[in-house]
Length: 426
Image 1 (tube, rainbow, N blue to C red):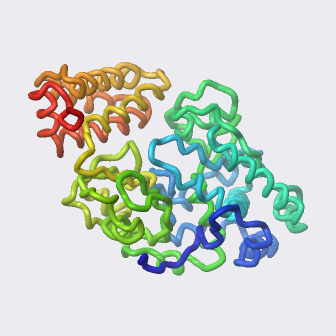
Image 2: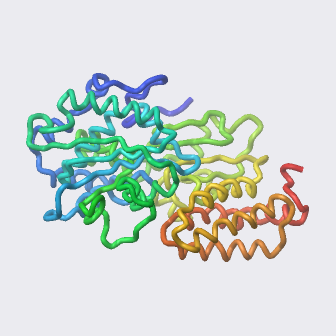
Image 3: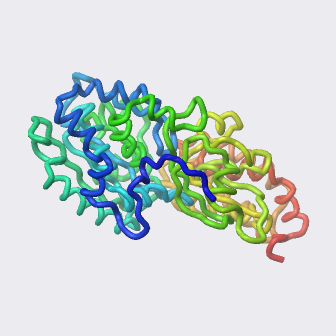
């Protein structure tokens, strides 16, 4: 039986539908909006509280949320924009979809409070094409929020006006990268852009723009309503803050998305909240934070799943999308499958990514299908280093499962070469 932990983002989660505006308000929803915007609390106080809470971005990078908002210049240009990134195109990642279907108003209220903190007047909620059902839910609930006076012109009778548009993505992985996402919204080719200037200075249409993940924004109203110390106390580790949405897939008895204290141990997530491994499976490895993180072996089965503890072992929490592999899984084949995705989704802007990822994919394909040679192993290691010269983080992220495959499962790779084929599919 799973341990009982406070549910913050999933408080109103139901098995078959999204929570309504009325249900959200009954759970304390829009109280923070009424207090901070309706009560004319200064925008700077919003940033101060979120900064003190220790809230780190939930989209993968883990950047301090309050620090990002504070980087919008006080004397900067207007209008200003907020972008909620729900693109979620990385394999294995699905927590934001579950959140949008569970409690859309916690996202809407969080976005409105975030916008108030740096005087944004418009936001784009950026979703992938396959999330059409989520887009429909959000558009319906956005209109309900407008009718209730929580969104639109002169919110709660104040001089603060702010609205949100659901923006349907073109559907490529690169669009989830923050600067490429902004180009996509503006109708440009979605190539990444290196700072300076940062988007908080010059983003959409050269105006100050903040990009946050939707899980990040959904936490904002709860932090403001309950205080920064309350948020910190939710963590399972002293350095952490808040809860975390973990999305678990693969060889577990009960896959899905769960909300747990950030820093909950991997062993507890799998053994308790996923009801253990699938029948007949033993743990071989997992990717802890999505397709662009490194394999972890049974040696780290008890590790706290937070930013700092994973960083100490050279890994990343990423999107907290835990993909579990058992003893019957060919990790060469699994890694090849990921490289097929990353090579296809390269925007083609820079040579290391455009040429390097297909080359890596081809070497892995040859190894998997019995055409591998011993020299492919050092070649792959060299390529994993070279793709770090790419323009953005797509190719280095794609290299993470490859280098960890060679570090932890080189014997399995060599077995493919010596036996001239995959030993798991003989």
